[in-house]
Image (spheres, one colour):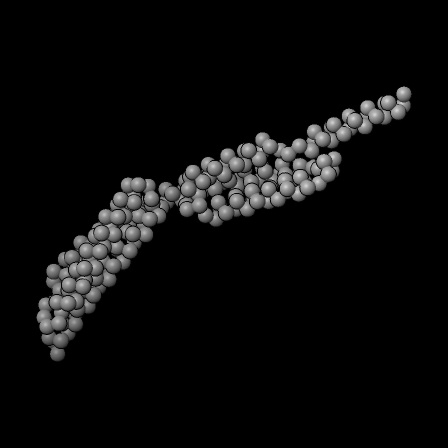
Length: 201
């Protein structure tokens, strides 16, 4: 009788232990869903550090799950995995939030740069119209005109990227256009000053 009770008790304990040793699948699924949301929010582009932290947290969770799977069934414990899943989910949610903030910031910066680039191009064109003409200067003027044509192409591409919601690309193209246009304007102004200085000698 005692032997039978012991066998039943042992079976119950084994059943309970086996039940407690089940992976926290719901928590793991929640982590995966949070990471998917972060990816859809373009966290890898607009919040790369936060997204990397979330991926690292998921990697730690995966490592812990694997470590428990490699153990004998009755020796498994998923308490640490559950804790890591909570941290990974929080990290993924933060990455999604940071991505939303980063994307809005990039949108505002791109919009501002597009405006500044257009202004710089207009100013460079006006300066180029006043560029001193003379022997050997036409080649330089033609080169600067070609540079300005390139800035207008880049600015058009920036506007297209902006409309498509590709704010980092729009920002980069607008910034390049602004820099080139500013350099053209500066070059023309330096040429004008050089001519004035030569006349005053």
